[in-house]
Length: 293
Picture 1 (tube, rainbow, N blue to C red):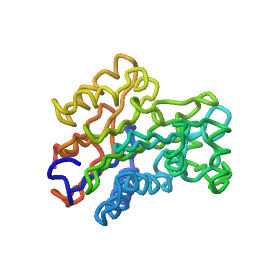
Picture 2 (cartoon, one colour):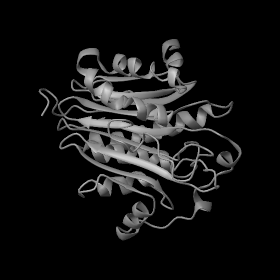
Picture 3 (tube, rainbow, N blue to C red):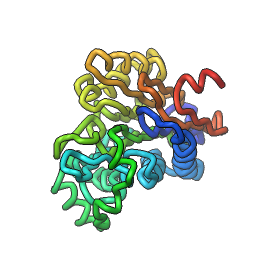
Picture 4 (tube, rainbow, N blue to C red):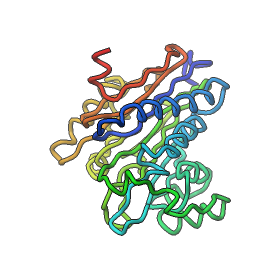
């Protein structure tokens, strides 16, 4: 256990590194605060970091303003393929599903995979696993929204948590990239790219251009530097590598001391955070907005 961490908790959630259209500000802000509240309720009752991440991300998957679960992007065939991942810092167990179809909460399927030998299941295999473990079949029509039919945007939602026992977790969920090839998988479900958690170091979750984040294994980079640089500076150094590869993005992290950090170079990056040391919820649509406050 982290020294002095008992009865301390911290949580940060994000709703994606993305462009934002006029009129979307309030739904994004309200949604990210709802996700924070869901995860916080778990942590304040002494629940685990994994359960807190799941609760926060499930909330975002239910809200069509975010590209995860309901409201997921449409691929080139007009279908919906989703990815999600969870990592437990206690034992570095990973559960990830990729290009999964016809489930409402991919993050919960990923969580159910945590105790299994396999760490990533894809496509039909992921869907079969979901059915075998009681997850309801949800038709594409129930997940599709007019917003995603009309718009070409991408983003990933995620959460990072520290619980009262000193345990870390990180999670992601995404509806993918609009118009992408069938079967496309980005960074989101890949440990070391889109997420990572280790009780000895901290935890991180990314959003943005999935191919670029995966090529750079950004989560691994942050985990290697977070103890020295702190979470915010580590993420800043990571995301500044994205433009030369033609992408942008953002990340959230908590270090071993419980410090929260986030940064992005995308037009907007929706985040909310709180901790036992600073319990007043904070929500921002960008770093620029935070600086103005």
